[in-house]
Length: 199
Image (cartoon, rainbow, N blue to C red; front, top):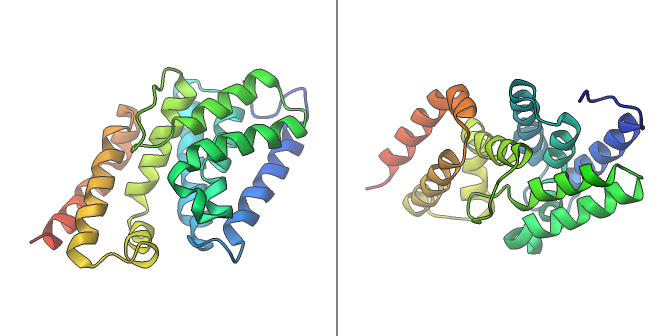
């Protein structure tokens, strides 16, 4: 299905885009505004690229990508269960805009199952694509992952390298083959840098 359809997807997308961006640029966002340019936008771009390649629902993918970390950007206390909170918030936002009910369910499901550290069945294409896109961003945006590790979580050098390497390994394991092909060189470089820091 094309991104522009018979209902006002453009209007819904503009609202969601604005909400997600405002959450990232909110002074209370402990991940800081870099989350927009170095995570949300790359996840959205990867999701749309994989969706076009594999025949996914591009509307569902775009909305899910924009909102997948929404609750954590609003309040870091939501981070542990942000997949649950963000899915609920996305459902509320999309329902309030009169978006298609079946597509809302797909957005909700994709957000609920996007995390590598949470073992949730990804049995539909959009969920697999969003999980892959999220993981691809962790690897392709290594500088931002260093900020998360050492700036937000305040890890010391070796401890942080171990934590980040484990996160990147989890991320790599959830990426679809089509996504792995795109970022394999980034993965090799990231792994080499982190392994060197671990004594």
